[in-house]
Structure formats: structure tokens, C-alpha cells
Image (tube, rainbow, N blue to C red):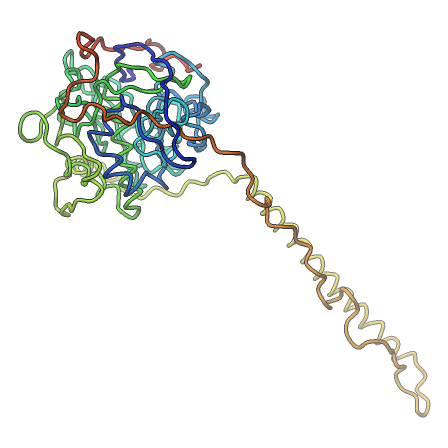
Length: 473
């Protein structure tokens, strides 16, 4: 198993940035050229920044404690151990930082390095995983609120998508989730079919440079649906620094997941099937005319995906492949049952209070019944024992005619406390930091590295071992 991040450079120092108003999303760094290529600030962010959407990042784990990702993560898990929250500690290692880098491409806040995600108001769910537990990781994300699942990982699967992974993908799709995966980075070598990109229903993404040309190592496979920036797309390490001059379909997948999050935020009622159809049919052709096996339908354009009119009968090869698989596997067509989630502390406290109240009510009712019966027999006995001479009658009881205090009378004044938790508490927000305002190299401009620098570089091959990776530190 390989995590698709090809390293062709070194780590940069943190850049000097210009402060933006508190609460505002800062502009990107000048080396985030895809912002200019996609007109993110001009055409996308005025429409949406991804609010209300959770993207599950199935990867090596995410360090949500670095300034750029602080407050972005929702609870996740380690699918390998079956516990934890999916977060990792700081690291300068590219392999261990892989998940952090993908999360930053999607939703970084720019508050540390100045690096900003394409969907900065989206949330990230970190699910630490490797190829041995992809099925469990996908199901966890599907059961815990993800609307998009990003898998920037790949495995050369000679037999195609493994049944357990395909069934997990189907489970997610039936829960109306878009699943995105990198196409793979061996296109100029052995070019194997890669899982989970080759699973039916997965939006598989190839990588292009800032000229919309296919990256030389992107996979050549019929499952490639679209392409996105992946060559010289830098990422954030798990120590908060930015690493330069990297390439891979990992980044292309993460940026596509960010674009999907934007569409799902703008169109919250749109089914996953239509979201994928919209992403595909608003892509701009790249490479040879028409669909090809390196860039699919072309390069995705987030602004067009948000606003263009896409016919209902427009092509959707991703879901067409899934429908064919589903027809051959009808047992998978049943809607997945709702998974019972563990109750949080507040819910448990509320349930406990309800139980206590019910016990009190039952006990009170029993006392009323028993007390009424006792009173009835006492009064009856009194009638029998009272002398009934001339003029004699029941002895007047005197006092108020209402019930005694606490016996069905006036309720005691409410004993409630102020609203649970009191007024909102919190510290001062960290002021967002913006990057230099100069435009980065444009879509169709010159590539980012200095003249004579590496062009495509050596493919990064992470250490191999049981389960496909070494555990993140």
C-alpha cells in the first residue's frame, strides 16, 4: 500500500503573513496557485466556504492541534486499534504527516503558516487507517456524520476492488455520502489498477499541473473520472510547517473532496449521485479531446460545479458503474440500518434525570393510593364509633377545605438552574493570518518551481510493512 504523495523538495520555513480581520478567512499564500486557477476568492467563497459539511479523512491521522487546524476537527477514531480520536502528534516526517496535509488542503484556517484550505468552514473527521481496515474506516465515517469521504491512499489490487471494501463503499453511498480517492501515482511505471479508486461508485481523481496538463505519474486507468491540481501542490506537515515541491494524486483527491464539500454546503438537499454528476459535467476537458484515462472528463472547476445547470440525464459514469455492481449484487441494495451511536454525557445525564423523575412519580402515586385507602377506612371506622344521639352528626373537621400542602395542592416554585452550561465561554480567537496578496502563477501560467528545479521528481515510496504502513507517531 502506498500513500500517494511524491516528495520532490524540502520543508520551507514558516512564511511571513499579513494579519486579516479577526473572524475573517485569510487569503492564501502565494504558492497556493490553485486558488488563482479556480478563482476561489472571487467566485467560490462569496457563495460558500463549506459550512455544515464534515469531510472524513481516511489516512495516517491528523494533528488537529497545530494552529492551522485548531477547532476544525470533529471526533474521529483509529480504525486500526478501534479506539482513540484519530489524531496524531507533531512530526516532520512526510509519511506520518500525510493525513494532516490532506486535511489542510481541505480546511486549513491559515492561522499558523498562512496556508488556507479551499473549504475552510468545513469540518474534518480524522480516521486513522491502512489498507487492512479500509472497510471499517469507511463504515465508521458513514455512521458518524461524514458527507464526504476522502481516501488519499491506494493499493495495487490485482483482483480489483476487494469485496469487503466495495461493500463498505456501497454502504456509504446508500447513506448519501460522496467517496473520493486518488487514482494512483504509477502511471509512468507499472500502472496497476488501484484500490479504492477502482471500486464502483468512487470518484477517482487524477493529477494535473497549473497548465491543466496531466502529471506524468498519474495513473492511466478507465476508472479515472476527473482531475484536479496535484503537481507542485504543497502541503502542511504535522508540526505545522509547509513542505514545498510535492506532487501526487493524494493532493488532487483532497482538493476534489474540498470542492465536493463546497457543493454539498451550497446544495444541502442534493443527493450524492447528483453532486458527483455535477462535478463531472462541469469539468473542463484536458489532454486529448474527450474523456481519457489520465484526466477523465477533465479538470474540476468548483465555481461551475456550484452554479451551472446540469441536465438530469447528463453522464454519470461513477454511479453508472455502481448501478451495474448493485444489479449484480442485489443483497447490497437494502438501505443500511441506522447505527446506534453511543450517548454523550449530556444525553446520559438527561436520561438519568428522566428515570429519577419517573421513579418519584410512581412512588408518589403509590403513596396517594395507599394514603387514600387508609383515610377512607379511618373515616369509615369513625362513623361507626361516633354516638348518634339526637342532633348528633359528623364532628366538624374545621380548617381549609383544600388538600394539605404537598398532597396534590399547589406545586412548589420551580427549582431550575440557569440554562445548562451558562453563557457561552471561550477564549480570544487566534487572529487569522493572510498570505502575500500578489497573484500566484495562473492556470495556464508557468510552473511554480524555480528554473532548473525538479520537474515531477522521484516518486515517494513510504516504508512497507504489515498492514501497509508504520504506525503514526
